[in-house]
Image 1 (tube, rainbow, N blue to C red):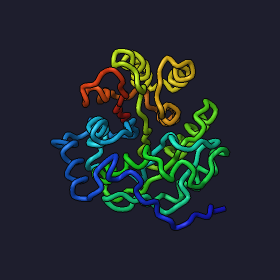
Image 2: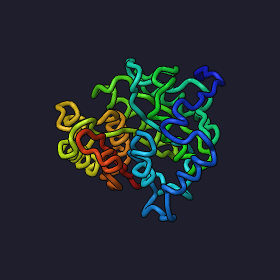
Image 3: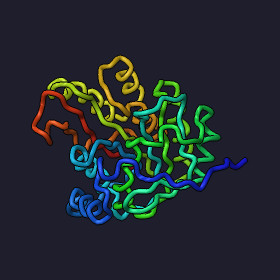
Length: 276
């Protein structure tokens, strides 16, 4: 049975704050962050990217997205945490598209149906999508790198191990049947002194490098590491591992202190790529 979705378009919620609100300025800024063209060593099938304001984490995110230029995918799945709303399971956007200053990114309806069938705790709606920035800030990078690619926005409301594993298994099933790029949207530790933040972040970086979703989930649970989108990262890495990925390349790790010069209270940012 086909799910019933509306034709609503979600307008950008954080354009003009997290990133430029004008098309020309935004495109020019992203191209500057991409820098000279450098092809990926192999086909990129997964990314971990930060979701703070572009002034803070944009260059780190761009390290991953720049690898996508010239590639083609059937669709991109963006998995993010929910910062403003709590809900059970995960919520897939029920509208037709997200809008940014670079245009509209259409939702891949067939993928949405498949995910809802594959994951009992997933539902379709607006929860976690209304004002959430963690999906939205990824989209201009995708639009600049890939053009008019359809996508599936998935927001995790309950980052329990059970939900993250169930989502990872569902994403693995989708990736086995479609040519997908999987993106986990997450920042790392929040508001620690720089030295403490780097200690916490190093644990997650090691788990990501090894593509070890079970260790990452355990370290998030015992607070050996911290990440606001740790659950989405676990789910995406689990799906990638089931598809044969045995490790990820760490492209960049930095903190907000590297931008502001204030190292007393920082947020960590990570960019990593998985290759086929």
